[in-house]
Amino acid sequence: MGKKISVDLDEQQTLYLTAMEISGYAQEIVTLMNQISDNLSTLSSKGYFHDRMSPESDEGDGMARYILKAQEFETLCEVTAQHIQNTYQSMTDTDKALAVYVLNLMLQDSSTDAAKKEEILNNQEAYVSLVEEQLKSSK
Image 1 (cartoon, helix red, strand yellow):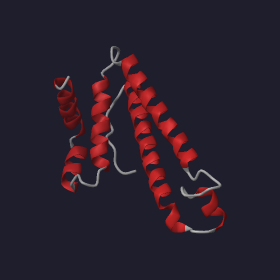
Image 2 (cartoon, rainbow, N blue to C red):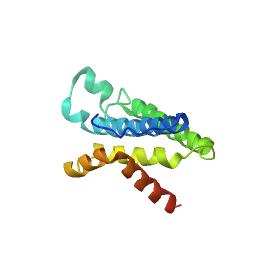
Image 3 (cartoon, rainbow, N blue to C red):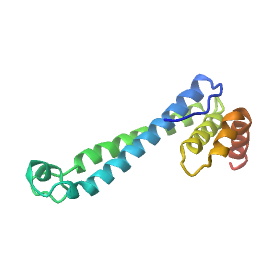
Image 4 (tube, rainbow, N blue to C red):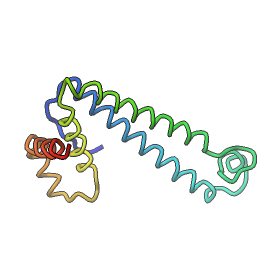
C-alpha cells in the first residue's frame, strides 16, 4: 500500500474517506479485470479454460459476467460515497477528508517524485490545509 496521510479526522470524515478509498479500489478492480479479459486469449487457445473464459468463446461468456458484477459493485461504492458526502457535508467538513484522499492518491502515484512525497509526509497538516483551501475556493 505504501505510506498514507495520518491526520485527525472525526468519525464522519473517516467514514467518507473510507468510502472514497473503497470506491477507488473498486475502480482499480474493474480496470484490472478488463485488462485480464483482454489478455486471456493470449494465454490459451484450446481447452476448458479457453472454452469458458475467453471472450471469443462460444460456450461461455468469458469474464463478462464477472466484469459486470465488478462494475455494479463499483457503482454501488460510488453511490454510497456520494450519499455519505451529501448526508454529512452540512454536519462536518468533508473537504478535509477529500484533501486527505487527494494527498494519499499523490503519495501512491508513481509519477510524484520522491522528494515531493517526503515533503508531503513531513508537513501533513500544512498540505491537508492547503488542498482543503483550494477545494473550498474552487466551489
